[in-house]
Length: 335
Image (tube, rainbow, N blue to C red; front, side):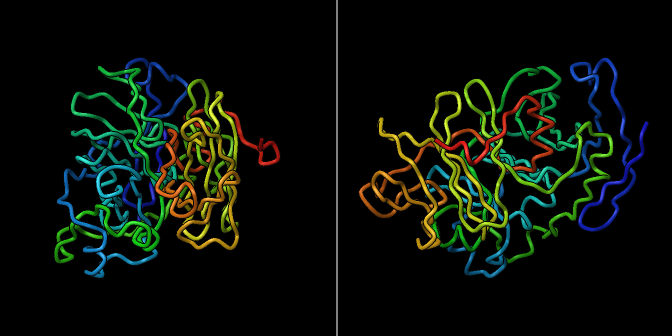
C-alpha cells in the first residue's frame, strides 16, 4: 500500500490510499495502480442554461478564464467556464453532454449526454469515473474498464479548450450555463497540480507539462505534440487513410483536429500570420479563412463546416498511459 497526498487548489486535501488492486477490480490491468476515492467530488447535473452574451454582461467570467467549448449543436455549440462549473465538481451530467475535468491529465473530456456519473479515483494517474450501474470508465479514453459495461466505449462530442473571451468573440449567441446573481455556484480556483504526488504509482517513464492532441483513427491512434510557444500552427496528416488537420492557437492554448475532406475535395491548411484572430487558418485550395471552431467565415468556402475527428487535448504523459501503442506525429513528415 502506498500513501500519497493530492494537492488540489494549492492545498493538501488529505492523505490518499493508493492500492494496487488484485483480481477483481483490477483484473484486466494487473500492472496498473488504482487510487480509489469515490465521492471526493460531487457531480453537477443539468445546470440551467443561458447564452454566452447574456452571461458575459453579468461580469462574473473573465476574458481569460479557461473554458471547454462544444463546437457543434444548437446555437453553434456552447461553452463551460472551468472555474465556475467544473473545477469543483469535476463532472457535469447534462443534456448537452457529459463532461469530465481532469486537471492532473490536462484535459476536459466531452461525451454524448448521459446521467449518473460520479468521480471514482485514478488509474495510473488518469481520472476514473463510475456510472449508476457501477461500471468504471476511463475519463480520458471513455473506455469501460470494469463492471457491467466493460469493453464499451463512450462517444465523444466535438469540443476544444479555449478562453471565455475568444469564444465570446466567435459565438456570443451560443449556449452557456446561467450564473444567476453570481452566488448559485461556488467558484473554485483551478487546481495547482502536483504531478509527482498524483502519479506516484504510475508506470510512466517521465512526467512532463507537454500537451498533445490525441487523435483516434479507425484502426490506430496518433499524438500531435503542440508547439506551446508558437502563436498559430497547422499540421496536415493522414491517419488510417483519413486526411486530417490539427489547428493550434497559442494565445488561448487551444488545439483541435478536423477531417480535411469536404464533399470529396481535399483541403490543405496553413496558419496565416496576418489573418485576424477570429480566423487564423486558411486552406491552400480556395484561400478561405477558417476559425478554430472549424467554420469558414470568408472566401469561397464561407458557411462550410469541417467535420470533427474523435480527439482530445491532454498532457502527453496521460495520453501515453491510455494509448501505449500510439504513434507520434513529426511535423517534417507532413504530406
